[in-house]
Amino acid sequence: MKKFIAFALALSALSSLAAGPALAEQSEGSKFLFGTAYNDNVDAIQVQAFTAHHDGLPLRVIAATRSSMREAQARAQHDPELLRALAVRKIALHNVIDVSTDFIGNKTVYYR
Image 1: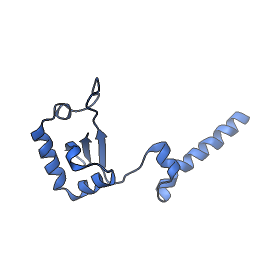
Image 2: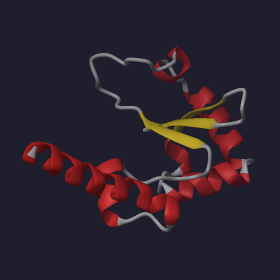
Image 3: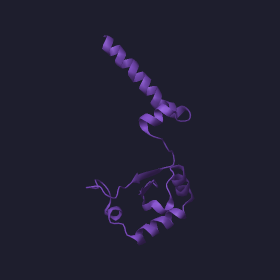
Image 4: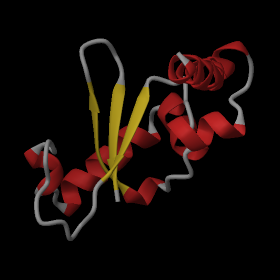
């Protein structure tokens, strides 16, 4: 019984950390546990250059050329919302490898 009560108390403490950002600005504990939450419909994925395998990365990202990167950077430069999202995440425009948009309008930025 004591274990159940301790589990319930721990669960309620963690749920308050998770629910906190929904009610107000994101707390430091929530940022530490879950990462910073951005509500701008942009996902940013950092691509490591020297990894042994690239699980789930599209081929256009793995085999990106200078011209394809310039095209992606030009698309990002002409999209004000995407530029704001990159600035908030402190991603420089010259580090963008590819930008893709899904059918809902959410964007995924691959960067180095």
